[in-house]
Length: 434
Image (tube, rainbow, N blue to C red):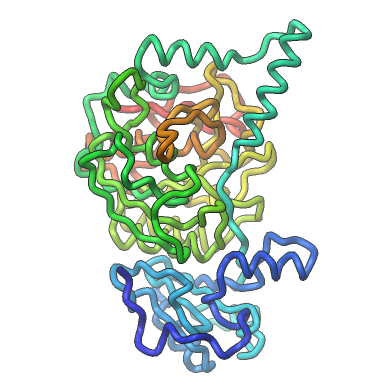
């Protein structure tokens, strides 16, 4: 349980946008009222030059900002709702700070602060909202498209074919394509952090598994959405789920760290995601999986976070996005491994983003865990592809203790199965287990 810093946790007396404790829903409503692009929250992110975080904190205090530090919270697990009347929240592990929207103007900070040679600030940029890649609408569209195509006598990718394969092999098509059953590794001893909507902590398939859990959005970790439970299932689900259920999990003995950075409605802010990243890196998670994002430009804050992860032996893996457009943030950062989605025939999924793509994985009609009472569900999206890469990364990390950070990235790339498709669609190719 995170402890609040001394002097924090009181009801803010300053305008809500001047503090960092304003909730996601309030920020979304404010964004809609402002009009224009509601991708921006109205707050700002400061990325500090390498080694200049402490100088940055002192500079904020000198400008009379009320500053909260993630180190003042147990395990650096800070939910912004607990920041009280703080106008700035610093995440020292990744070298980033969040500033309240009105506070930056009230205290006279501007982009000019980045120009001085001795400034600790690298860049000041807007904060954006982040969302889970909801695929329910996509499945409805695909069902309708399949029906129409059959009426016209047109051949489409056979989703039933994948289901038949899973029933016959007691294995999901994604694990089969990634050569998971041939691997002798289990992910034992490897920490995998999944930053998403949480987890159904009482799911029967995970009986006996221990979870390290933290919420960064002011809600209980228990997953009332399903997205996070599904992603955790693919990355770290059981080897033998029992009954006639096919195996759907890859790193079945990995230690699971559940970071709830998305609300039960599947929304968050950049700072909420960064808070989860700061926590996962602090805990030296070898693998960090994020099936979330927005169609925003490259964010320096995510680039800094990804670089901090690599320096500390961690690898951040992110879904490329489902808009059939250019890859969005955080996957578009050069220090974050971007994952595209593939269909069962290994063609790019028609919803998968393109451009900055590092690797590809199964993302169409993926079967995995789901909150009770449903227990299991098949959904589609790059959100489903990223956990395949995360699970395989955990197996590689177990297989060789030197495969950490950048070396783990390079191994995933070197071992991928080449595909006869542009790298802007599938990157280096299909991820493979060791």
